[in-house]
Amino acid sequence: MAAMMLCACLFTPGCTGGEQEEILCEDGGVLTQFDSYYCEFEILETPEAEECGGPDGELTIENECYGTLKIEMTNTGESPVHIITFVWWQYDDWMNCEPINMISEDLYELDSMGGIVEGALPGRGSLIVAFDHPNSCDEEDSSIPDAEISFKVSHVT
Image (tube, rainbow, N blue to C red):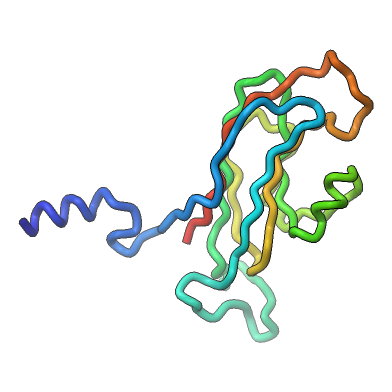
């Protein structure tokens, strides 16, 4: 019986105290010129409410304790896709094609045909990961190809 439980634990993520992955959202579909998909989520606290930050609360490599954001996307369409991560209050700016600030250089990829984008979360708060057609702010053009994507956004701690 103990051997069965040990085997079951070895094949269960997080059972032995290793990394745990929480799927925040999963979706997909056809992305035309003016379509977008996005995933909105909130990071409330550090894993197990541990202290985070240096003497002034600044984020450094040594104290990245909010976990990692992992963004997986496949694209079987003919158009690349912008994968961007930003704070919730920039949503209207993004939708209106105004400039926004990415939260981290590691958490975006322009003109992606698929793959994995991942990086440390800089802190708690409400964030958005968006999958956007690169021509979404251009004049309508029926010759612009579509993207067909599927994606998964996870918080790894």
